Amino acid sequence: MSGSANVAREVRRRRTFAIISHPDAGKSTMTEALALHARMISEAGAIHGKAGRKSTVSDWMEMEKARGISVSSTALQFSYTSEGHPVEGGADDDVAYVINLVDTPGHADFSEDTYRVLTAVDAAVMLIDAAKGLEPQTLKLFQVCRHRGIPIITVINKWDRPGQTPLELIDEITERIGLVPTPLFVPVGIAGDFRGLLDRRTGDYVRFTRTAGGATIAPEEILDAEAAAAREGDEWTAAVEESELLAEMGQDHDQELFLAGQTSPMIFASAMLNFGVRQLLEVLTELAPAPEARNDIDGEPREVGEPFSAVVFKVQAGMDTSHRDRLAYMRIVSGEFERGMVVTHAQTGKPFATKYAQAVFGRDRSTVDRAYPGDVVGLVNATALAPGDTLFDGPRVQFPPIPSFAPEHFSALRATSAGKYKQFRKAMDQLDSEGVVQVLRNETRGDASPVLAAVGPMQFEVVTARMKSEFGVDTVVEPLGYSLARRTDADSAPELDRQRGVEVFTRTDGALLALFSDRWRLQFIEKEHPDLTLEPLVATA
Ligand code: G4P
Image (cartoon, rainbow, N blue to C red; front, side, top):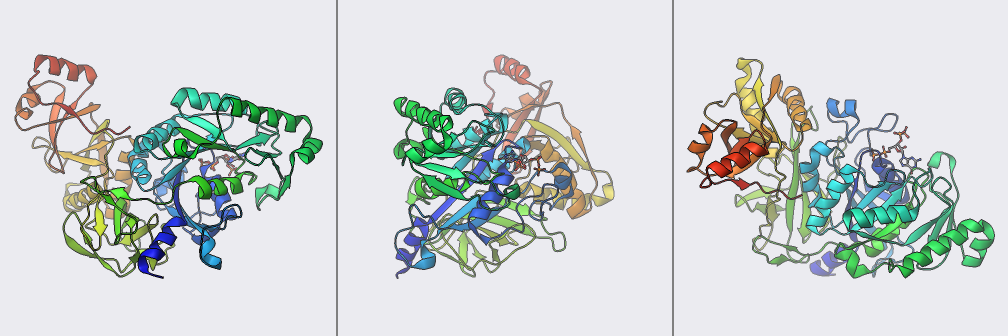
């Protein structure tokens, strides 16, 4: 088989997605359930670090353990053989799908990071707690997906517990975010009495049987409508009526509208009992898009079959304190990646050797030899790489930079001991280049006390914790009274600096930023000095 035919086949069987949800909706439980149904190809140690479970991926930092949240991205790769719609062509092993699940940090403060992760996926699963409906973090992540045009599959989780009715949940989603759910399955049994699913496309009943503690795949029995009615009586009738009502309202799946982000195939599930999980895998493989061409900085598409190219979407250091290193995660956009190949870093034009490419993140790592569009690969010792950077082979390509959120929290940072200045400076450069926070400086404050700009205050805790654990520097964070930043220029800077409640800084990338105490202060100055340059920072959500 020729190289390009091979890439085309590998692309066809790949699906790369993320789960977007509010903390506690069941993302970790669902990830484990998916892993149970599919065959893990690359296991990132274990999946999650909640108490009592195996924990290796997300415990790289003490703070994270204490809070039980995940601040690092991980990517898991599964293989899944679909019964309903096998991959075309190829023998045995080739017919399995390769599914990449890219983890999103769960806490609201890490939305900048999350935004970057969402640039690496082709689809998202919006996981909703049946009792709670849409929650704030889900809404925020949804907006990012919508902005990027990422198609969304909706999963109503925890159907084994009392919750809202399907129609209430559908109404809420339609009205609040303008996304029209098109259920592929409706539940048989109300929330809290989950018996199975009515498959709206076949009319059949998928009946589930509980297993002890939901620890194994729940056995399924497929019954036709008549047998289902005899078995479940009123519960079946109610599901049929609901399905008919949805059809009357025009809420049937439409692939084009789904890919355009207007409608969302919907499933009801219990991640804990493993109900509806196979259905989610079937929907992902059947309906979610395979990796596609991506436009470069000039708007020209880089087709998946062209020579290798990839985008770095996250850079992380200090995951392994025994040998300090820096891992850059890239999402492959085109071509075949082979470990050891020397590629070009578009931003510097310099060669980059990929000898230490890794498929696995977290503490346990294994090398990756080959990877294809849609796959996520970690590159070790990637000191020169920053989020948004492009790597390529063959014809030159550079992808557009990843837009960032506008920061709203500003704090001064300094080392408690002046003797540690050198380490402090080095650490600051490191965290800055990883994009953990934005670093601002001005002459008045000097180099020993830079100002950190963040989307959420927890980013400051990450900085102080890493300063100590990785660089042995104790630091203090002093929150400043600013809440708003505007981009300005050298002509306007002196006048702005004279204003009360305003301070001007230079960001590492050279941009001049003016910080304001609040919106009213900004509006007042804009009115008094209409000639000053004051532009909003790029905000993407
Ligand atoms: P997250 O990653 O989205 O934050 O959520 P996680 O999977 O940790 O789930 C949050 C809680 O919800 C957990 O309970 C989990 O067991 C429960 N849960 C997840 N999916 C389901 C479901 O389908 N049905 C029911 N009934 N519960 C579900 P916990 O008490 O916080 O933890 P644990 O003691 O169960 O581990």
